[in-house]
Amino acid sequence: MIPTLLTVTSIFVIAFIDAPPVDIDGIHEPVSGSLLYENNIISGAIIPTSVAIGLHFYPIAASVDEWLYNGGPYELIVLHFLLGVSCYIGCKWELSFCLGMRPWIAVAYSAPVAAATAVFLIYPIGQGSFSDGMQHCACRRFAPASSGTRLSNFKIF
Image (tube, rainbow, N blue to C red; front, side):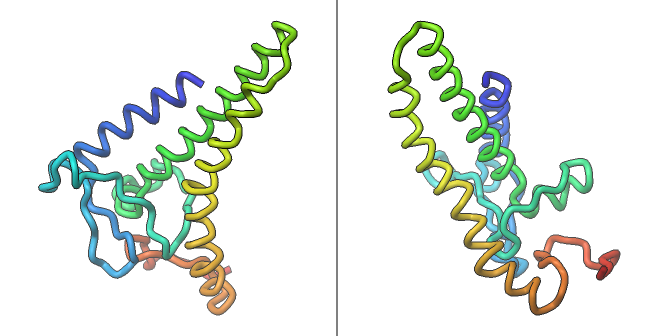
């Protein structure tokens, strides 16, 4: 729980200060949200992943520039945050079990966690992969790629 939440905090601070612009619509017009790209504390934001490709789970080491351009810090923050708060539910469940109590604290805390999961994880998958990405995949027989993805080495199976 602690390592994932520390990862979320550190990546959020770094991305809020110095994240490059993200191609949020897949139309080669990146949107910047960090402080070093002329935003202030009020207008600054972590720009989410492009809805044209949904959530993409390729590693950071594949191409850091491509990962940053497609909104990789947003995914890293969201997935580690959800893992950390889910571990917190497990910690409360285990504590109540060890003390011989009923697990109502963990059960009550699971409702906001389910809401956060729906907003930060299920909604982007539904917007990108199901409404946009799956149609492109079915029509063209390959996975959709955003404007930041390298298309020169792309092979159809």
